[in-house]
Amino acid sequence: MLLIDVGGSNTRVAVSERDGVIENPVIFPTEKDFDAGINKIAETAAPLLHGEKPEAVVMGITGQVSDAGELIKSPNLPTWEDRDLKNVLYERFDAPAYVLNDAQLGAAGEATAGAGKGASVVLYMTLGTGIGFA
Image (cartoon, rainbow, N blue to C red; front, side, top):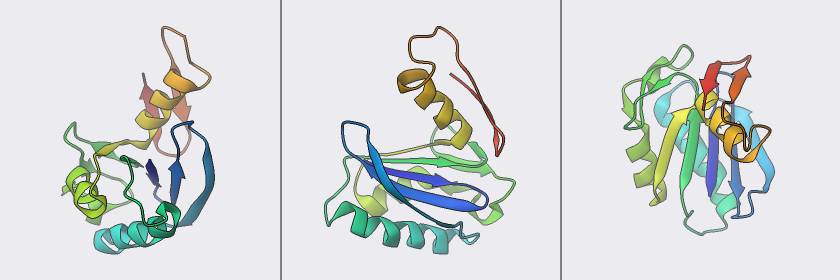
């Protein structure tokens, strides 16, 4: 699985196998221009994928994301707004793509596999981009 975290300052790209282990994420300054950002993500992902198609692509991004995977509003990435990220990633990597707000994705991860696993309610707070509930 290809994992992408697009923040206002930095972007992280990594690959995770089915066991959930994430090794050696590549971190670089976030491209403020949408096309340059997607190209940089694809260039960074290529050697991590070793020429193979990912099983899925998951992106967490700063800002408000629609249920359809479109970035509606972002305080740090205005040229990324009104972009159908889900379909852009699907077309670029030929794999199912999922896009969520980064705080929501962090909350979901902690609720299902992290510190909140098994709890009926989980509150997840991040200082960078917002608050997520799962």
